[in-house]
Image (cartoon, rainbow, N blue to C red; front, side, top):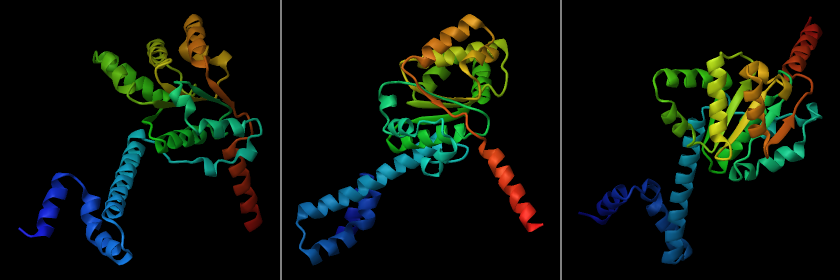
Length: 254
């Protein structure tokens, strides 16, 4: 068997596809530039490692299940003067995930809460954390089904594998008494064990409208706000501004 075939065989067994793809071209470059064997090997392994890191990042992005991938560089901070931009940029560093802290994003409809929650989630994916995005109504449906099928504990363990869960649009859809209780249990199970990002259009005093029970709501708020980062976004609605802009453009064309 020739050297090339042996190399291809061993690299396939060792699962080093990037090394297999580039070793020959890099060998020619190493010869041309007089690189040492060590420098040549380092260049090969750097490419293999970079490719694996990128593959893992893409896998985490797919697993996160973001409906739309929105990033911080497209977020219009100047339209939300109530939002503390410096606080948002500090959250990007990921320390809140290491400390198992929550982020609560509160504001009117259309102010960019989902955009901001998604952007923070994508930043955490970039930093190597496992993230999952789901709407509050979707999460409750999943919990209700798991209860019916007697697999709530298994589902809880599955969700605890995620470093960050983004629960979007809390308060937009009312839940049944059982749904509210299950969501309470879900948030409580993650308390001080993993981080949760919640976006909601409800002030804290209105959360009882979602969970139904005042004592349970008070207990949940006590857990959720403990060492939490609260981002207030009561500015003008993005969608309202976009609608006005479209109307203005249509009037100009008319």
